[in-house]
Amino acid sequence: MTSLRKLTAEALAGLCLAQIVLGGAPKQCAGATELSCHNTTTIADTCCFNYPGGSLLQTQFWDTDPVVGPDDSWTIHGLWPDHCDGTYDSTCDSRRAYKNITSILKSFGNDDLLSYMETYWLPNDSTGEEFWEHEWGKHGTCVSTLEPDCFTDYQPTEEVPSYFNTTVSLFKSLPTYEWLADAGITPSSSKTYKLADIQAALSKNHNGETVYVGCSSGAINQVYYYYNVYGSVATGQFVPASPDNSDDGNCPSTGVKYLPKN
Image (cartoon, rainbow, N blue to C red; front, side, top):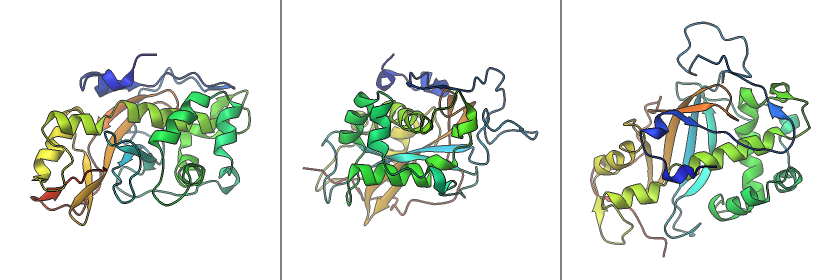
């Protein structure tokens, strides 16, 4: 599989996630011509059209206290389906809020994926397993195209590796640390930056679409990359989009801190 980390911004304009996941197969959506959040007619098949959560956010952390993840990389927060207007559902199916994500991924042969998550998808206040359970239960169960009925010859829990594979694939294509560094924006205990420069460095690599930047106490700590999708979250085409809400991220316009992890 081509390294998504090396894809250009132009290529990311239509990122297709073709994955190999042991188990059944996601429903084929060859006729998926409507882009989520842009449909003009009612879409009956929500296995091939993400609804109501048509805006997909790949969210990332920059944790410095305590430090989480490598010094030269942001880490994964999650993949969230929003209603195209900043609102969202949560914990949509308590029956599928699984409490054994690690064993599920292993059972479907996703050991390499799990190893990656153990480095790049960790919280700052709990275990990896607890964090993955939270993200899946709160957000993953609300992805309409990952419902059990959306798989042929469905095997229980097989939608889980699809969700985590897609989230990690997107994250690999979004090297926030590298993009900021290329613009001369690097972690520092003394230097500060303009918010517009940070957003410009990221937007340049997100097909020109605005990237949400979140701050805490004047220091950047989160970014959200928005997408709309043709077809399923498991195998569909992700198209960069701008934020669909008015949240300003609580960042100052100047004097933004980017604190070092070390």
